[in-house]
Every structure is written in structure tokens, then in C-alpha cells.
Amino acid sequence: MKIAGTVSLMMLLAAAPGLGFSAESDADRWNLKDLYATPAEWDKDAVKLEQQLQTLATCSGHLTDSVKRFKTCLDLNAEVLKRSNRLAVYASQTNDEDTGLAPGQDLKQRAETLSSRLDEASSFFNPEILQLGRSKVDSFLLKDKSLAIHRHPLDDILRTAAHTLDRKGEALIAQFGMATDAASAVFSTLSAADMPWPTVKLSDGSEVRLDQTGYEKYRALNNRADRKLVFDAFWAKWKEFERTYGVSLYQQLRRDAVYARVRRYPDSLTWVLDANKLPRSIYDTMVQQANANLPTLHRYFRLRARMLGLSELRYYDVYSPLLSSDLKYPIAVSTQLMLDAVKPLGEDYVRALELGTRSRWMDVHPRPRKRSGAYMNGAAYDVHPYLLLNHNDDYESVSTLAHEWGHAMHSYLANKAQPFITADYPTFTAEIASTTNEVLLLDHMLKTARNDDERLLYLGSQLENLRGTFFKQAMFADFEREVHARVDKGDSLTGEAITKIYGDILKRYHGDQDGVVKVDDLYTIEWAYVPHFYNRFYVFQYATSIAAGNMFATQILQGTPGARERYLNILASVEI
Image 1 (cartoon, rainbow, N blue to C red):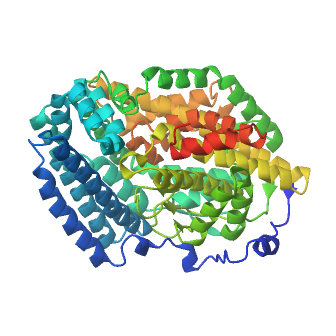
Image 2 (cartoon, rainbow, N blue to C red; image 1 turned 180 degrees about the vertical axis):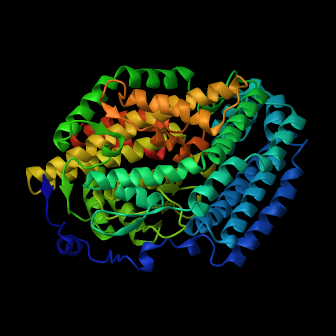
């Protein structure tokens, strides 16, 4: 079944005068001058940070001399961290615009060095606060009410007393921070800038380049032979670098295992979860329930095979849309659809979101050597969030836009409502804002669809979203738990061994042995492609958050009294 036509661009632009996006316009590139007008201004602020680090060092050994001294040092530490974050955002965004340019790489490395020096300079804080003790800290809080903004981070320090080293130990760990990010840096450079991407000729005679953005676009082609061609060429290229990516990921796993031992945790997973006070049972239960409900996923795959008219579903068929469509969603159209979809969140929310879309907070279109994928960086507290996209003008791009702006509005609201020291939010709740926006978008698209075929297109996309956000992320989490556990025990892992572990899990989730989805061995190199594995135990939170996001969106759309206010207060982290 095919849906012909295009979304009415003129109609949407008429409803949104002033958006003014075009594929080649500066309006589609983020404006880093909001951070620093020139690189020289960045240099100047970096010097200011260096000076503040020297002042911060004078707090060492004197942090608890008096309430006044205690507050002065805590406030200075917060100010230094805020400045470091701003420097890092500018450096990171500059590098991601073109990962192949040396100046951007240099700037990012300088920012990382400054961040490591900050860690080293502030390493005395936790041991000295622990030495002070909870009762003394509480007495300081009573004597100076302005210290209240530091209560939560102080509680976190006191809570983790058993996992904090003495001053020398903490300083040593901080120093090693400069030498322990190599694995992630190698992965980022190799996968984004140095991979020799293949080019293939499709059935229509066109030649396409299969970098990461190209793969994400062409893996969903309607022609099955083209999909297989794309999969075979793309994953064969990653397979050539299996050994290198294996070394890179193994070094990341070893680093995490060492830090967990140094911090006196039984394993890497417990260490990472404890940062947000999460019990391990949450992670284990999520993976267990995902496996228990694989029959539901397999039922969906069988339905997909029937709708595609296939007797056997292959792994290269899982991204093909259930209904083919010529509908295009340029960024102006996508933006207006998103703005319309989030109206249930209220005028203030929509106004703030529209301001961001008009003010060059995002870098929209794919370019050679630009970082792939999509993300939001909200660490520049005094400025605004920045969003990286690789918009392909398809409906998935619309959904991604709504997802990342959900993150951006979360940071915007939290930064607006709170002081810097408490404005950050845990990853465990971060994905709730993004998935809620996706549900609101789906509701809007279903209500405004012109016919049942178009509604089926959006419903099919939502089914894929549930597969990708719950089951696929749970599969990734299953894999992460397994490889981390092996390295925690002291096992060595080669790229080939990692491929075997991932392949077994990939095939189990897709019912390969039961004839649900056939997964070719070549495609089991997919683990090497996933950047989230260098951000330890991150992906499971997509699965937990999609459940929470659906709950909030349903309550808001149903008009449940107080639902919208509760949700927005959660984003702002305002007590209710």
C-alpha cells in the first residue's frame, strides 16, 4: 500500500509565518556565538577558569573552617563547574559540526583537559565534607539559610561515604581522568570521520554513500533487494574494523570495571546505578520483563511479515515502513507539526519552544563529517540548549525532532526554575520528556491525517517506536550487562568474542531459531555501531522512560485534572 502526495508545505508555512527555514539557510545551523562571540572569547574564559581553579585550591584543608568559608568554597565550586560546562559545550558543538577539522578536535581536547583539571582541583571536597560529618553539615545549613541550594549535592556526598576515598585517593582518581577517555575518543573519531564509507548502486541506478546517516535513510527503502544491498555493504565495512572496535569497547569496559573496584562496588552496574540511587533490581527486572514478553515482539514481527507480503522476515526488513509513502517533511513543516502537537502542554510551553526553533538552537541537516545521529546538550546553564539533528525529511525525522526538543524543554524549564547547582537532572528521568513529546506528536498526526492509509503510516511508525525504544533498548541493556559482567570477572574480550555475545542476544530477541526473523551472521557486528555503549548503562532508561512518557501523555490528553501541571513541575523539578 502506498500513500502518495506531500504534506501541504504552503498551508503549514502560512500558519507559521516567520519560521523561514530552508535547506541551505543559516537558520538551520546553530549559533555558537550565543556561547562565545569569537574563539578569542573562549580563550579568555578559559584563562578565567584557570584563575578560579587556583583560588579553589586554597579551599583545600580549610573548607570547614567556618560556615562562611564553607559557603564561599561551595559557591566558587559551582561557579567553576558552570564555566567549565559552557567552555565544554562550545568546544563539543564546534567539533561536532565537522569532526574532521583539527581546530575543533583541538578545542575539544583543551576543554577535556580543563574539565579534568577541575576534577583534580575539587577532589578534596568529598573527603573533607565526609570528615565534617552529617550532624555538622546540618548545623551549617541551619546557621546559613542560603546554603539550602547545596543541600541535595551534600546529601549525595554523605550518602556515598562508603565509596569515597581519602583526599589522596580522590586526587589520584581525578588525575587519571585525563587518561581514561581514549576508548570513546577513538570510537568517535573512527566512526564519524575516518571510516571509509562504501558506495552502492541502487535498483533505480542512483549511487548512494552509506555513511551512518545514509544507512539510516536507505535501510528503509521499499525495494527489498536494495535493503539487502545496503545492509550487506554497510555491515561488511564495520566487520572489516571488528578488531579495532573490539579493542576500543573492551578498553571502555576495563575502565568501568576498575573504577567500580576502586569505588568499592561489587560490579560496574551497581556502581553506575548508585549515582542516581537506583537499586539494581530496576535494571534486572526491566531486562527480565523484556525477555518474558518477547512473544509480543515476535507477534509484531509476524504481522509485519504479512503486511509486507513476505514468507520470511529478514533482519534487513525490520526498518521497511509497513506502508510506503512519498510524504516529505522539510524542517519547517516538521517544526510546525511539533508546535501544534505540544499545544496540550500550554501556551507558555509552546511559546518557549517556538522561541528556541526560531533562535538557531539546532543544527538541522546532515553534512559530510558532521556527527551522526541526534542529541541535545543542555549543559550551558546561562545560555540555552543546543540540538544536533540529521534531518532526512521523513516522518522518523519529525519524531526525532519532537524527541530532542522534549529534552531541550526539560533543560530549559529546569534551568529557568532552579539554581545551577541543582538544575541538572538524572538520566533516569531525562527520557520521559522526550517520549512524552513523541506520544503527543502521534496523537496530533492521527487526528489530522487525511485518510486511513495515512493513519496506518503513523501507527506503523509508532509500533516501530515501541520496538525500537522498549525492546531494542532492552536488548542493548541485556548485552551491556553481559559484557560488563564478563570483564568485571576478569575475562578478556576480542571483537570476535563481542560479536558472538551480541549475535546470540540479537537472534534471541528476534526469534531467529523459531523462524520469526532471520538474522545473517554478518549483521551481528551491529554492536560496534552503537555509541551509547561508551556511555555505560544508559540505554535501559529509554525502555523505562517510554512507559512513564506514555502514562503522562495519556493523562494530559485525557484532561486529567492537574496532570499537565504535575508533568511540567517534574520537568522543572519543582516540589508539588
